[in-house]
Length: 221
Image (tube, rainbow, N blue to C red; front, side, top):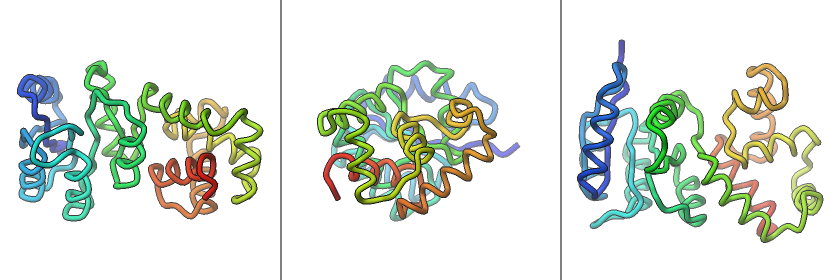
């Protein structure tokens, strides 16, 4: 069995070692490196090319967003989950735009964290409910109601009713399986719908779609 190789980057020793202890208990995980700052994280990732990085946002020498950009430039196949206690909308948007595979809160339940790592490596975008709520809150400040949001989007990209429904579920942070369950359709059908939505939005993945949908809703781009 091929193990999922992981690097943990966090400036707090207890967080680093706590995560390492939890993840090393899983038969299919292997923590191959830990880093205490952004620069060290980049060097370790560029040397070891792990499958996935758990990357803190607030770190010395180089913050998580700057480290994320460097890692995606030099190791584009490595998945990166931003690990944070800070649910700041600007961080969320910039991280998504820079290629993060999603977010994990430091107080997340251990089982959910493990499942999120496996989902991220399989290509799912990870957006916890608390983070998704921040995006919805931001949306609400710029849109009085759902109808206004739909009209502002439709002025620029002609979305069908089903695509509007999909867009809302994506912004809520649901993965493909959860979207399929919500819409009572097969997961393969949900993937096809989502692929068509990506084409219409002129994006290639979940992160870009969320950023694009926010742009349609908030800023009139």
